[in-house]
Amino acid sequence: MRAKRAFAAYSALVYAFLYIPIVVVVVLAFNSGRQVLNWEGFSTKWFGEALRDPTITEPLRNSLVVAVGTAVIACVIGTALALALSRMRPRVRAPVDAVVYMTLVTPEIVFGISALILFVQAGIPLGLNTILVAHAVFNISVVTLIVRARFVGMSGDLEEASYDLGVGPLKTFWRVTLPRLSPAILAGGLLAFTFSFDDFLTSFFVSGAGSPTLPLRIFSSLRFGVSPVINATAVMILALTLVAVIVAYVILRRSAGQRAGTIPTLPA
Image (cartoon, rainbow, N blue to C red; front, side, top):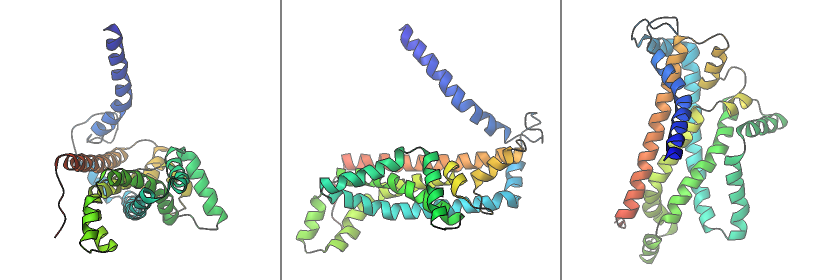
């Protein structure tokens, strides 16, 4: 009993250490005063100031463009790779699996340095395009694992029935396989969007001059001190990230519940 209480107290301290600073930033973002640590009343004016500041809105636009592009690329290539891996022979699948998992477990600083060396050696100018490519490489592995888990857990009866009815492979994929995979694809795309939107370390290495993302803009501002506008910007990033993660979680949970509790029907 004492051991459980001690473990619970230690866990509470760890969570407090991790999340109290985030709560402080969220609270101070609604401070009406210009002095960050002096509470002068509740106000949302700094959010408006952030959205009217071109040094904030331009990096925000860059982050959104990169994140949306990353999500689209990751969903297309990740889904194709997930379907291909599920049909490969074990000898061929093993090295591809190793590459997919290696992308996820490699320290991000190593990944960022490697991407930078590749782009420099290839003579590719650094900018939003290199950030997009670097983010897409990582998030393709994320989408691949999510979609593959969904595909492996599906029964192949509907596809076989579709073939027995004379439907070709492409039409079967479009009308049978893809609708069943769509929750996993959407969830993977949302996670890819989230990972790309708030990424700092990889973007730091592969971004060029004049193409900062929002996390890079916040980091550069911190060298001159924390301002209410930066707090408001950080809260907006946090809110967008939480919404995307929660939506992805709900989609995956509903998809798992439907797979366990319902019997799918073949589209007419």
